[in-house]
Length: 452
Ligand SMILES: Cc1ncc(COP(=O)(O)O)c(C=O)c1O
View 1: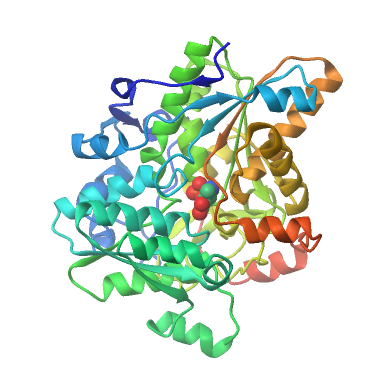
View 2 (view 1 turned 180 degrees about the vertical axis):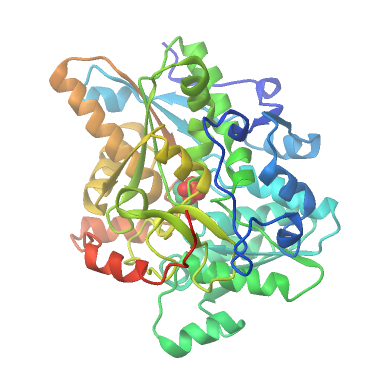
């Protein structure tokens, strides 16, 4: 039996899969908060280049991946699908566990799959600079890497708590030529207003997004890049799921359950959409499970309503599960999962019951990650460790039931810059947060009033 199922470069996907073509019901429109009407391309053109706006609304099922992007992808793609044989033995489970290993990219996660595409289209349309936010530092470093390759300047607003927890993520971004500022900062009006209200603010993705958008709209030759949430971002990530399908076919296995973590939803969407298509179109019944932290329980405790994507209320309104745009999550170590909202595409599919969601606290997540590392060697980032935890629960259930299920999870990044978090876990200093209902209700009071 092969441990690693690898593909040749020629087998790398030539097209991204766009699930918008196969939705059981149309996606609710994105709304302009000023007019209360659906937005058009012109509303987005100050922040995104036209090819990406086109992809955002495209109904084409397959979208060609331009050759220059595929050439860069070859630096690390196709990524391996690995059978977790040693972990299966350690857990003494009859289940078969596979993980799709996205941590082999230069930045260490799935994020370059879209960073490279976004940098390419911005360069093609004559931009000089991209601004962005980063939580865990994975997205900022991915965009820094991609901008470096295509000769674009890159400015990253990094959530302050992560900036302090992970100084070497900052150094990595600088090594690829990016400028990094802790957020909230005094460089933008949004940042200054927040600091005036709360000088000790540890920041949030919502705040950093507002800062990066403000910086982009304030300059002519600058656009903004988002590392998750939007339709085009999830589409770029479908290279993950498309490769996984081919690899499982080679292994001769059909998945019973697919598991991934969700922050804004890009790694999860990219991993599961090609399989979800088979559920929607061909009546397959593959179980699909999204895992989020109890400290930021967007899908499991949020409300499905129109909300802003950022704390400064600068973005259009998207219908999504949300904890309220002013929600500042507890400083847990899965920085990439601390977002108040979620990809509208995923939220729509969740509302249509195309997948399940569970929330888990961080201590059992780290315990599962350590168990996995001891068998398979890979030290996972705290974000995908949420998927490891639920994969482990499934495998242990199989041990009880004697079932030999095929469990496949997305291991979307390594944790080499997260060792301070592991240290705190080993020292027993990691608090578990359950976000209280009253606080969610309080934060949801500020929701914009939109029909539907
Ligand atoms: C390794 C890793 N996994 C997951 C995420 C969550 O983002 P998304 O839900 O878009 O995949 C992040 C975000 O920073 C991340 O760095």
